Length: 274
Image (cartoon, rainbow, N blue to C red; front, side, top):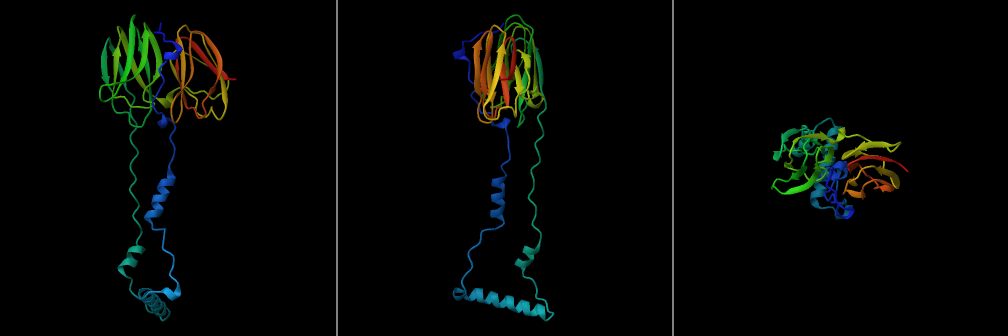
């Protein structure tokens, strides 16, 4: 059994999910490289505006060419030697080590501290075998609650988004029974390719990367008794695309560029192309 909320009171996932998309920004790096190499130069002076220094440099060039033709070689200046030497390649920062999955278990109320998650994205697989309420909050480094991830009564098994936006420093659990929490890399979540019917049960995380391109209608069903809500996470922010109570069947649009679906449900649910 789940603590039910009305459709209008379902919390909106308010944090940015830009890390789910990613992408290369080579244009800025190329621009910086061009500037460092001195590509931009002043326009050449006209012949009648040549300064004495320019004339002297031209004379020196002619003397060098004459020396070359006569078989003599002029010595290279320090500046010429520096230009001839190969440029040192910039040091490349090593790739950060991927964060390791973390697992926790206990009974009753507890706070667990998380190792830094870095740039990796995780969801949490949670179980509870008690008879009363289980509530799971993500907590920031100042001890403030970020999000209520789980709020159920009795036995529970489901997957919930963890750090799709803000990184938590800890998890706070209120429960009357034994519980487990396993942090799983998002890449290991199930994936739907946009074809056929995908079916799951309860709170779930589903990758839909590449499915929503332009207008993408999908049909959703739910046979549970409590709240049924789906957030579509993209590169900027999550959209609440379904928010109903009890049995549901309807058609909606996946937001263009949607990457992951976070499903809150207490029964079996399906998604299929319309």
